[in-house]
Image (cartoon, rainbow, N blue to C red; front, side, top):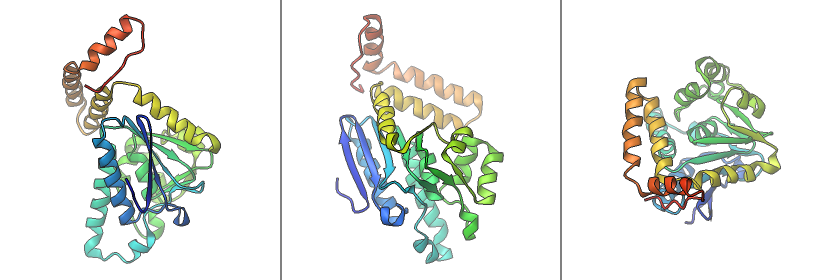
Length: 260
C-alpha cells in the first residue's frame, strides 16, 4: 500500500501505521483521514493481520489535531458533514475487529486525542501530552471527543479537559485512565509492538468477539450487554480455534490459532 500521508509496514501478524506529516505535527487533514480510513480497511481485509500499531512520525507529535488551515476555511454549511466524516473514520477504527494500539509520542491534541481514544489500547511516551483545546479556538470537539472522553475517564474529568481546554501530561493521563501504560520515549514503539504481538498471539475470532461485546455493551443497558456477551460466547464455540485452544491447554502446549 502506498500513501502520501501515511507509512504502512508489516512484521508478521502486526502492522504499523504511521501518520507521516511531522512538519505539521501530523495534523489530521481531510486527505490524511481518508488515507487512514483506506489503510485500516485494507488491513482489516488481510486475515494475516491480527493487531495494528498506530503512531505519528517524529518525536514531537502523535497527531496535534485537525488541520487548522482547513478548519478556518470551512463553511458553516459544511461543518457538520466534516465532523460526521471524521467520526465515521474513528468509528471504523474502534469497531475494526482488529485491535489498534496507539503509540502516543508527543502531542495528542484535539482530533489527535480523539484518534487515540478510538484505539483499543493506548501506550504513551513520558513526553506525551493530551488535551481537547477546541474551546480556545471557538470550537468544540468534533470527532466524538465529547462522547469517548467521558466514557474513558468519567464526566467530571472529561468536562475539566473540554471546558478549560488545557492539556495534561502522560503521568496524569495514566492516573485518570486515559492511557494504559507510560514508558520512556525510547521504549515506546517496543512496548506498543510487544502489546500488539501479545494480542496477535491470541485467537483472532475471540479477540474480535470480545471487542464487539465491549463496544456494543457500552451502548446498551447492563442486562442487554450481558445478553450480547452470552450470544457472542455461544458464537465463539462455532470456531475451530476453541477446540485448538482447549486441546492445547490440556496437552500443555502452545496453541496454533488460525482464525477459523
